[in-house]
Structure formats: C-alpha cells, structure tokens
Length: 385
Image (cartoon, rainbow, N blue to C red; front, side, top):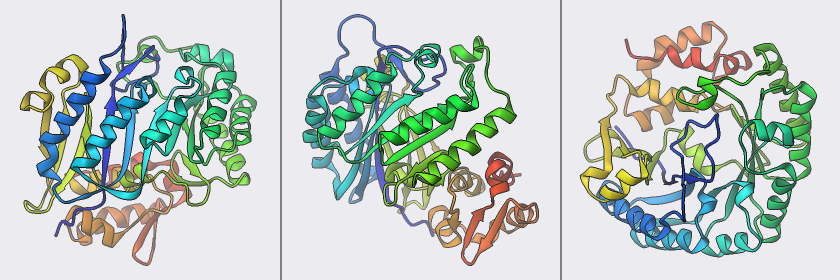
C-alpha cells in the first residue's frame, strides 16, 4: 500500500543575470529593466492554490528556492511568498528553507533581510575559486566576491550554508581541483556539493565544447583526492556529490533521494506527489517559459503536463534516487514509497549483488564502493522490460 512520504516545496525563480554556458536548467537572462518580482510572486501563489487539493492536510518539511538566480529576488518578495505558502500549508517547526545564491548578486545587508524573511539556509554557487576558470565558465563573480558573500551571510546569522564546487573544468589540474576544496574548507561551510562538469545537451558547451577538459582518468583522480580532503576535514559523504558536517545534510535533497514527495511551483517546476486516496504517484510539471507560465499560472494552461508513474516503472524511479545515497535504502522504505512488495526487485538485486555493486545488510541495500562508480549501470538493472 502506498504511504505518502514527507513533503517538500520547490519554488522555481527562473531569471539570471547571465546564462552560464554549461547550464541546462530552466534559467533565462532578463534583458532590460527589472524582472516582474511582484507579479511572479502573485503567480506562484496562484500556482500553489491550484495544486493545494493534491496535498490537503500534509506538512511541508523543507522549502527550496532554485533557479535561475533566486538571490535576484528581493527579500520582501521571498517573505511574501513564504507567508502566503505557510498560510496555505502547514510548515513543520524549524523547516529547512534554502535559497540558492550567486555570489555576484550578493549585496551588503541583504542576507539579514533574507533571514528575517524566513530563509535559514543558503546555497552558494561558487563552482571554483580560480578566477581564470570562473571566466571560462561564464560566471559573473570572482573568488574574492565569493569569499566576501559567504562572510556577509555568516555575519547576518546564517550558520547553515552550502558551497557548490565543480571539478574536471577546462584546463584544470589535479592541484587546482585540490586547491578549490582546500579553500572551500577554510570558509567552514556546513555542507559542500562537489560534482563533475558534464556537457549537457542543448547548452553552449555541448555545441562548442571548451578545450582542455580533463580525461576520465584525471577526473577520477580529482574525485578521489578531493573526497579524501573532505573526509579528513570532517565532511562525510552521504550522496554521490554531497558532503556534510554531522547533522547538516540537506533535508530537502535527502527527501528527493529517499523518493519523498515534493510540490513544484513556478516556471518549469516539477513535482512528485503520492495520492493516497487513488493509490497512485503523480508527476506534474509546469509550463517552462516564464512568459507562458505567468500568463497561465493558476489555470490548466500553466500546467505543462501530468503523468502517473506506473507500478512497473516505480522500481527504476526509486533506484534512480535512492542509489545515489551512500547508505542506500531500507527495503521497508521501498515498499512504503512505491506500494510494491520488495520481492519484485529480487532478480535485479541478485544480479547487482553478484556483480559486487550492492550488498545486503539486514533490511538495507547498500551500494559498494564499486557500485558507486557504476551507479548508472546499477540503476539500469531496474528498468522495466
């Protein structure tokens, strides 16, 4: 039987100062004037009102403002959205509320305002501390601005923040990748995301790949060495690309990886909801372009599409998330969130265990070190025939 898991709220704020050449997110440069912040918040609340019947009576455990560059939005707009959302939905006490921030958009005094608005976690898109590489990535900040923005947030009272770092960057050496991690650790974040640059379809880098991208062997050396540096500094890896101090894992992302539910509002936002009364799992996504979404928000025109996840596909969807976690998943959790008996995955589990990719520890299925290197291959075993 399907049991609704914890619920999160994802809010997509689509505009940015400049579209990065590697970015495949639904982000749009706003050219001329100022984005329509007030109209967008009104539309977000209308979008939320339309989806509310799907989540009546449920508690929101985390909120995540993603983009785009959410820190382009003034704090009063963030506050109005949070007040409107919390008047419509029950927020858990001490719910984690994260705002993604570009260091190039930070201004003195704004972090205090975001904190007063209800934000209690900041995620900084630093990517690298090498200024020449930042230019190659199309970033609008430099390393000094990144360090200054982090200190501004700390002085504003934020004691929970993440730094995003990338590796295998154009012309990056092993020493440069190590230096990025060392400099990040010196800034004492509670969480570090460390992930490899990939050339995603429909990006500038995919069409015109930059020169000097490290080969697979060097990228692997970077990953291993940086993992060791992070571990030595007290950052425990809990997901493929996520490292945290004790008790500081990202609650919002953990909910994704545990196949939890999330309501998505805003242009191009995706949601996944367990409908207990129907015993089904619904995926819903919103119209992608901000102009089209703004025109239709709160009406069927603002919905890009709905899809029910069939029982046959649920094992793959579950594994796509859960096998990213270092400690894997409980078979009882698989049954509760998919509504299926764990016996339906006996065959692919046996293959993965035989190949040394997974191991069973009581009720838990845990990826081995080898399995974490071949996550995509492991997940593919659970695709429906």
